[in-house]
Amino acid sequence: MTCTTPDGTVIDLKTASKAWAAGRVEKEAQPTVYSKLYEAQHGRPPERFRFEVVVGTKTKEYRQGDKFLTTKRNEHDWAAFAARVRTMARMVKAGIFPPADPGSWICSPQHCGFFTTCPYQSRRVIAQVLAPRDEQGGNDGR
Image 1 (cartoon, helix red, strand yellow):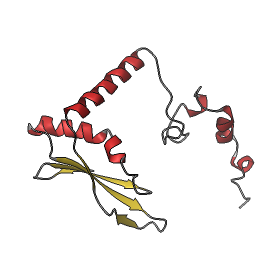
Image 2: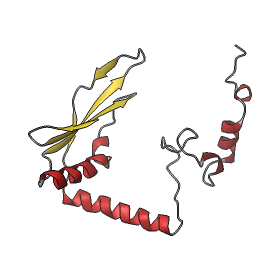
Image 3: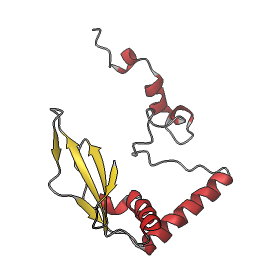
Image 4: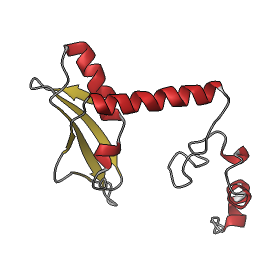
């Protein structure tokens, strides 16, 4: 959910299983895109972009983070983002699909439709994913 305030702050509400690491807000693309969209609509860039991250706990209760994660974007950020988009578009047009980082959430059978046929994925890992649950030790007979 995203909203704006009268003072020009763009706010996006996020949920997470754990608190965000320091510096993550500066690596996110969303503030860059949303800031540019805000500027197109209002004729000026937003004063700031703020993530409000609600962190879930093991008891399924939620708590507000100790602080909001705030950033500000400028034309240099937009130019870098646009360069990435142009490069990705050229790669797709050329049929080049680079692999995701193996540690990324997207590189998983739950989130990638090509996981089991991916040439960059370990055959051992794919075999584990395709194996019946009882062969993986996940079925205790109950």
